[in-house]
Amino acid sequence: MEIRAIRTFATIVKHGNFLKAAEALNYSQPTITLHIKHLEEEIGEKLLERGKTLKLTESGRVFYERAKTLLHEYEKLTKTLQDLEVGIAGLIRIGISEPTASLEFPAMIADFKDKYPHVELSIQVADANTLSSLLYHDEIDFAICGAPEVSMKNIFRTLYQDDIVLLVPSSHRLAERNMVDVTDLQDETILFTPYNCPIRIQIEQNIVEAIGTKYKKLEITSSMSHKHYVQAGLGVSLFTRTAHSFSLPGTKMIEINGINVSPPVGLLRRTNDTPGRATLKLIDLIEDAFQKKSSNVIATADTK
Image 1 (tube, rainbow, N blue to C red):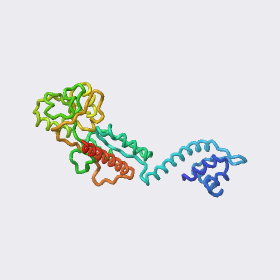
Image 2: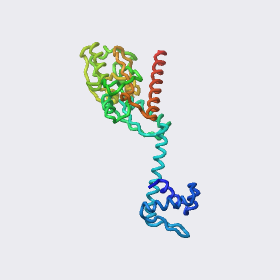
Image 3: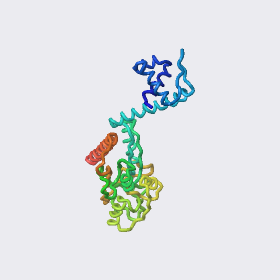
Image 4: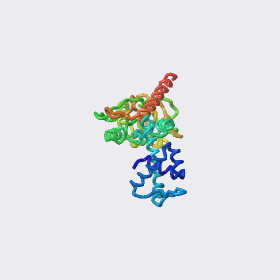
Protein backbone atom coordinates (compact mmCIF):
# COMPACT_ATOMS: atom_id res chain seq x y z
CA MET A 1 0.00 0.00 0.00
CA GLU A 2 1.64 3.23 -1.16
CA ILE A 3 1.58 6.30 1.05
CA ARG A 4 0.92 8.51 -1.99
CA ALA A 5 -2.28 6.57 -2.76
CA ILE A 6 -3.44 7.03 0.84
CA ARG A 7 -2.64 10.74 0.62
CA THR A 8 -4.57 10.96 -2.64
CA PHE A 9 -7.62 9.33 -1.03
CA ALA A 10 -7.50 11.71 1.97
CA THR A 11 -7.13 14.72 -0.32
CA ILE A 12 -10.16 13.66 -2.39
CA VAL A 13 -12.26 13.38 0.76
CA LYS A 14 -11.01 16.76 1.99
CA HIS A 15 -11.81 18.60 -1.28
CA GLY A 16 -14.93 16.63 -2.21
CA ASN A 17 -13.98 15.69 -5.77
CA PHE A 18 -11.25 14.25 -7.95
CA LEU A 19 -10.55 17.43 -9.91
CA LYS A 20 -9.77 19.62 -6.90
CA ALA A 21 -7.67 16.84 -5.38
CA ALA A 22 -5.67 16.58 -8.61
CA GLU A 23 -5.04 20.34 -8.54
CA ALA A 24 -4.01 20.27 -4.86
CA LEU A 25 -1.58 17.40 -5.39
CA ASN A 26 -0.39 18.58 -8.82
CA TYR A 27 -1.39 15.24 -10.37
CA SER A 28 -3.33 14.58 -13.53
CA GLN A 29 -6.90 13.41 -13.02
CA PRO A 30 -6.14 9.96 -14.55
CA THR A 31 -3.35 9.55 -11.98
CA ILE A 32 -5.78 10.36 -9.16
CA THR A 33 -8.28 7.83 -10.53
CA LEU A 34 -5.55 5.19 -10.86
CA HIS A 35 -4.42 5.71 -7.26
CA ILE A 36 -7.93 5.12 -5.92
CA LYS A 37 -8.44 2.10 -8.22
CA HIS A 38 -5.23 0.45 -6.94
CA LEU A 39 -6.07 1.31 -3.32
CA GLU A 40 -9.54 -0.23 -3.53
CA GLU A 41 -8.15 -3.33 -5.25
CA GLU A 42 -5.52 -3.78 -2.57
CA ILE A 43 -8.01 -3.31 0.28
CA GLY A 44 -10.67 -5.37 -1.42
CA GLU A 45 -13.37 -2.84 -0.56
CA LYS A 46 -14.99 0.08 -2.31
CA LEU A 47 -14.07 3.33 -0.59
CA LEU A 48 -15.94 5.98 -2.58
CA GLU A 49 -19.43 6.13 -4.11
CA ARG A 50 -19.22 8.09 -7.36
CA GLY A 51 -22.18 10.22 -8.47
CA LYS A 52 -23.24 13.83 -8.57
CA THR A 53 -21.67 14.10 -5.15
CA LEU A 54 -18.84 12.00 -3.82
CA LYS A 55 -19.71 9.88 -0.78
CA LEU A 56 -17.69 7.62 1.47
CA THR A 57 -18.75 4.03 1.83
CA GLU A 58 -18.77 2.49 5.32
CA SER A 59 -15.34 1.01 4.57
CA GLY A 60 -14.26 4.41 3.25
CA ARG A 61 -15.27 6.17 6.49
CA VAL A 62 -13.30 3.70 8.61
CA PHE A 63 -10.31 3.87 6.29
CA TYR A 64 -10.39 7.69 6.20
CA GLU A 65 -10.22 7.99 10.00
CA ARG A 66 -7.24 5.65 10.13
CA ALA A 67 -5.64 7.29 7.08
CA LYS A 68 -5.63 10.73 8.75
CA THR A 69 -3.74 9.32 11.74
CA LEU A 70 -1.36 7.42 9.48
CA LEU A 71 -0.58 10.47 7.34
CA HIS A 72 -0.02 12.62 10.43
CA GLU A 73 2.46 10.11 11.86
CA TYR A 74 4.14 9.75 8.47
CA GLU A 75 4.66 13.51 8.27
CA LYS A 76 6.16 13.51 11.78
CA LEU A 77 8.45 10.63 10.84
CA THR A 78 9.56 12.35 7.64
CA LYS A 79 10.31 15.56 9.54
CA THR A 80 12.25 13.65 12.20
CA LEU A 81 14.34 11.87 9.58
CA GLN A 82 15.06 15.18 7.87
CA ASP A 83 16.08 16.67 11.21
CA LEU A 84 18.33 13.71 11.94
CA GLU A 85 20.22 14.35 8.72
CA VAL A 86 21.31 17.75 10.01
CA GLY A 87 21.76 16.61 13.61
CA ILE A 88 18.89 18.45 15.33
CA ALA A 89 16.67 15.55 16.36
CA GLY A 90 16.83 12.11 17.88
CA LEU A 91 17.35 10.73 21.40
CA ILE A 92 20.46 11.36 23.50
CA ARG A 93 20.94 9.19 26.60
CA ILE A 94 23.10 11.01 29.15
CA GLY A 95 24.62 9.83 32.40
CA ILE A 96 25.65 12.38 35.01
CA SER A 97 26.87 12.36 38.59
CA GLU A 98 26.15 14.71 41.49
CA PRO A 99 26.58 17.53 42.27
CA THR A 100 26.81 18.52 38.59
CA ALA A 101 23.49 16.78 37.87
CA SER A 102 21.52 19.01 40.21
CA LEU A 103 23.48 22.25 40.34
CA GLU A 104 24.91 22.86 36.87
CA PHE A 105 23.45 20.51 34.29
CA PRO A 106 19.87 21.90 34.27
CA ALA A 107 21.10 25.24 32.90
CA MET A 108 23.18 23.47 30.23
CA ILE A 109 20.21 21.34 29.20
CA ALA A 110 17.91 24.37 29.09
CA ASP A 111 20.37 26.12 26.77
CA PHE A 112 20.59 23.04 24.54
CA LYS A 113 16.80 22.55 24.38
CA ASP A 114 16.35 26.20 23.40
CA LYS A 115 18.63 25.62 20.42
CA TYR A 116 17.48 22.10 19.52
CA PRO A 117 13.88 21.62 20.73
CA HIS A 118 13.30 18.45 18.71
CA VAL A 119 16.06 16.46 20.43
CA GLU A 120 14.75 14.12 23.12
CA LEU A 121 16.88 13.58 26.22
CA SER A 122 17.10 10.79 28.76
CA ILE A 123 19.17 11.59 31.87
CA GLN A 124 20.40 9.02 34.41
CA VAL A 125 21.98 10.26 37.64
CA ALA A 126 24.47 7.90 39.28
CA ASP A 127 28.05 7.65 40.53
CA ALA A 128 30.97 7.41 38.10
CA ASN A 129 31.45 3.63 38.33
CA THR A 130 27.75 2.96 37.76
CA LEU A 131 27.76 5.29 34.75
CA SER A 132 30.83 3.53 33.39
CA SER A 133 28.94 0.23 33.58
CA LEU A 134 25.87 1.75 31.90
CA LEU A 135 28.06 3.07 29.11
CA TYR A 136 29.72 -0.32 28.68
CA HIS A 137 26.28 -1.98 28.30
CA ASP A 138 25.13 0.70 25.82
CA GLU A 139 22.45 2.07 28.17
CA ILE A 140 23.76 5.64 27.86
CA ASP A 141 25.60 7.47 25.06
CA PHE A 142 28.08 9.36 27.24
CA ALA A 143 28.51 10.58 30.82
CA ILE A 144 29.64 13.66 32.72
CA CYS A 145 31.13 12.50 36.01
CA GLY A 146 34.20 12.04 38.15
CA ALA A 147 36.96 9.67 37.09
CA PRO A 148 35.68 6.07 37.27
CA GLU A 149 37.75 2.92 37.69
CA VAL A 150 40.01 2.33 34.69
CA SER A 151 38.36 0.46 31.82
CA MET A 152 39.67 -0.51 28.39
CA LYS A 153 36.16 -0.03 26.99
CA ASN A 154 35.72 3.60 28.08
CA ILE A 155 37.84 6.74 27.92
CA PHE A 156 37.70 9.63 30.40
CA ARG A 157 38.77 13.19 29.61
CA THR A 158 38.87 15.83 32.34
CA LEU A 159 36.89 19.01 31.65
CA TYR A 160 37.17 20.72 35.03
CA GLN A 161 39.16 20.38 38.27
CA ASP A 162 37.11 21.15 41.38
CA ASP A 163 38.50 21.77 44.87
CA ILE A 164 37.44 21.04 48.44
CA VAL A 165 35.85 23.51 50.85
CA LEU A 166 34.36 23.25 54.34
CA LEU A 167 30.68 23.77 55.09
CA VAL A 168 29.72 24.50 58.70
CA PRO A 169 26.57 25.61 60.57
CA SER A 170 26.39 29.39 61.00
CA SER A 171 26.54 28.88 64.77
CA HIS A 172 29.71 26.78 64.58
CA ARG A 173 32.89 27.90 66.35
CA LEU A 174 34.68 28.18 62.97
CA ALA A 175 31.92 30.15 61.23
CA GLU A 176 33.48 33.53 62.03
CA ARG A 177 36.59 32.61 60.05
CA ASN A 178 37.08 32.73 56.27
CA MET A 179 40.00 30.28 56.27
CA VAL A 180 40.73 27.28 58.49
CA ASP A 181 43.28 24.47 58.56
CA VAL A 182 42.53 20.77 58.53
CA THR A 183 43.97 20.59 62.06
CA ASP A 184 41.04 22.76 63.21
CA LEU A 185 38.74 19.79 62.59
CA GLN A 186 40.00 17.80 65.57
CA ASP A 187 37.10 16.25 67.53
CA GLU A 188 34.58 17.39 64.90
CA THR A 189 31.89 15.19 63.38
CA ILE A 190 32.71 15.11 59.66
CA LEU A 191 30.13 14.14 57.05
CA PHE A 192 31.46 11.69 54.47
CA THR A 193 30.24 10.14 51.24
CA PRO A 194 30.44 6.28 51.05
CA TYR A 195 33.67 4.52 52.04
CA ASN A 196 34.44 3.54 48.42
CA CYS A 197 34.03 7.08 47.02
CA PRO A 198 37.42 8.14 45.55
CA ILE A 199 37.03 11.74 46.75
CA ARG A 200 36.15 10.63 50.30
CA ILE A 201 39.18 8.30 50.39
CA GLN A 202 41.56 11.11 49.40
CA ILE A 203 40.00 13.60 51.81
CA GLU A 204 40.17 11.18 54.73
CA GLN A 205 43.81 10.37 53.98
CA ASN A 206 44.61 14.09 54.31
CA ILE A 207 42.69 14.30 57.59
CA VAL A 208 44.41 11.26 59.12
CA GLU A 209 47.82 12.62 58.11
CA ALA A 210 46.99 15.88 59.94
CA ILE A 211 45.08 14.82 63.08
CA GLY A 212 45.15 11.03 63.13
CA THR A 213 41.78 9.56 64.13
CA LYS A 214 40.74 12.42 66.40
CA TYR A 215 37.44 13.03 64.61
CA LYS A 216 34.00 11.44 64.33
CA LYS A 217 32.23 10.26 61.16
CA LEU A 218 28.71 10.48 59.79
CA GLU A 219 28.38 8.71 56.43
CA ILE A 220 25.72 9.97 54.01
CA THR A 221 25.57 8.39 50.56
CA SER A 222 24.20 11.47 48.77
CA SER A 223 26.64 14.36 48.55
CA MET A 224 23.74 16.70 47.80
CA SER A 225 22.22 15.90 51.22
CA HIS A 226 25.25 17.05 53.19
CA LYS A 227 24.21 20.69 53.38
CA HIS A 228 20.88 19.73 54.97
CA TYR A 229 22.66 17.75 57.68
CA VAL A 230 25.07 20.63 58.25
CA GLN A 231 22.10 22.99 58.50
CA ALA A 232 20.65 20.71 61.19
CA GLY A 233 23.90 20.95 63.18
CA LEU A 234 24.85 17.29 62.76
CA GLY A 235 28.40 17.94 61.60
CA VAL A 236 30.61 19.70 59.08
CA SER A 237 31.11 18.71 55.46
CA LEU A 238 34.26 18.57 53.38
CA PHE A 239 33.26 18.31 49.76
CA THR A 240 33.58 20.05 46.42
CA ARG A 241 33.16 23.78 45.94
CA THR A 242 30.47 23.04 43.36
CA ALA A 243 28.45 20.96 45.82
CA HIS A 244 28.64 23.68 48.50
CA SER A 245 28.37 26.68 46.18
CA PHE A 246 24.62 26.94 46.85
CA SER A 247 24.64 26.82 50.64
CA LEU A 248 21.46 26.75 52.69
CA PRO A 249 20.44 29.43 55.22
CA GLY A 250 22.15 28.73 58.51
CA THR A 251 25.31 27.39 56.87
CA LYS A 252 28.60 28.93 55.76
CA MET A 253 31.23 27.83 53.24
CA ILE A 254 34.85 28.30 54.39
CA GLU A 255 38.18 27.87 52.61
CA ILE A 256 40.40 25.14 54.10
CA ASN A 257 44.14 24.44 53.99
CA GLY A 258 45.57 20.95 54.15
CA ILE A 259 43.09 19.14 51.91
CA ASN A 260 45.08 18.58 48.73
CA VAL A 261 42.34 17.04 46.61
CA SER A 262 41.21 18.27 43.18
CA PRO A 263 38.29 16.09 42.04
CA PRO A 264 37.96 16.00 38.26
CA VAL A 265 34.72 16.35 36.34
CA GLY A 266 35.02 14.95 32.86
CA LEU A 267 33.55 13.37 29.77
CA LEU A 268 33.22 9.58 29.76
CA ARG A 269 32.75 7.94 26.35
CA ARG A 270 33.12 4.55 24.76
CA THR A 271 36.44 3.83 23.09
CA ASN A 272 36.24 4.29 19.29
CA ASP A 273 32.67 5.63 19.60
CA THR A 274 31.25 7.79 16.79
CA PRO A 275 28.50 10.01 18.25
CA GLY A 276 25.68 11.44 16.13
CA ARG A 277 25.57 15.13 15.27
CA ALA A 278 23.06 16.03 17.97
CA THR A 279 25.21 14.30 20.61
CA LEU A 280 28.31 16.13 19.40
CA LYS A 281 26.47 19.46 19.61
CA LEU A 282 25.49 18.73 23.22
CA ILE A 283 29.04 17.67 24.11
CA ASP A 284 30.38 20.89 22.55
CA LEU A 285 27.94 22.93 24.64
CA ILE A 286 28.95 21.11 27.84
CA GLU A 287 32.65 21.57 27.11
CA ASP A 288 32.11 25.30 26.50
CA ALA A 289 30.21 25.63 29.79
CA PHE A 290 33.01 23.98 31.77
CA GLN A 291 35.66 26.02 29.98
CA LYS A 292 33.83 29.22 30.99
CA LYS A 293 33.57 27.94 34.56
CA SER A 294 37.32 27.26 34.65
CA SER A 295 38.04 30.73 33.27
CA ASN A 296 35.80 32.32 35.91
CA VAL A 297 37.57 30.40 38.69
CA ILE A 298 40.98 31.53 37.43
CA ALA A 299 39.80 35.14 37.15
CA THR A 300 38.38 35.05 40.68
CA ALA A 301 41.62 33.58 42.05
CA ASP A 302 43.67 36.32 40.34
CA THR A 303 41.67 39.04 42.08
CA LYS A 304 42.23 37.59 45.56
